[in-house]
Image 1 (cartoon, rainbow, N blue to C red):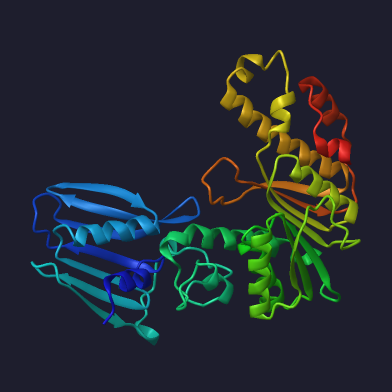
Image 2: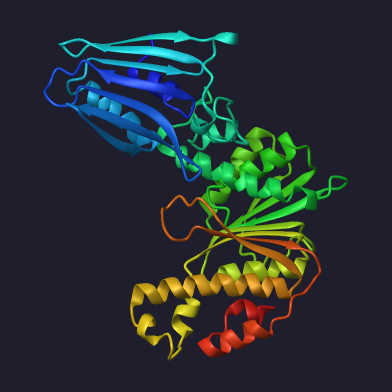
Length: 376
């Protein structure tokens, strides 16, 4: 028999049609209806609680709504009924607290059709399809369902793959592609890139992950060997000093701290990378340099000075890449730490160099000289 935790893991997802908590043995809320809603391209779960004639609405993420349901069933509610695309279920709680879960699966034409406004866009790596590295890295259960506490990581991985999907026409399919990932860390995204490009899209790809932590490199190397990913390699090192390749097709640098991002971008330009994907982090350099009498009333506030400096840093980097012949965008990226560090610089080489006079005037007015300008 399925446990409550197992049932909620399978039932509560974007394909849920509706779940209803009822049979409250305590005063207050009578019933609670729960349904998925799409807010700013993300799925949340709206709980509508009936209290007398009032309806109270509150939105939760997936992990929060599962915790909310479990707490409700343990604190007075006697029943949960839920309908989904492939699964219906009833949870009954006796007065003594015994929980019974009854499940009915749909098949074929019986599948529930979810309205378009309630359906999340299809993920590149689909929920329900087991991916070995996601299981080993703690994002997926062996069944293919997502670990509730790692759902943000699952969305982040898919969002990152969407950025790569957009630039696929820039990557040749008639030869080996070399990708260098600097600061690969636990390598969720590195493994995802390899799996997506080689296993799903059929590209002949070699990916090199660099990181300064020996334990991380050992762990990732072991996993790559276990999966038979013979063209996925991990080495301890810094991108500024790495001499293992003479040219690279794509450079990825995620959360390289402060000027480490500048060294990574400069190295990518030196290698003639066709594509650069960079999520900068901890942009302190300009914070120490920036001075402007006109902006001083704002810059005197430390937190505003820090944020302005961070945004200016990435804007200058994007402009410098355009001067070097790259078509550059700054895009929003889902960040795991829930901080302002959620911008991704995506640069695609075109060879068309932009004039940099306006940028030079701005940097002179702000008294800043970022490392990337000096390196390039």
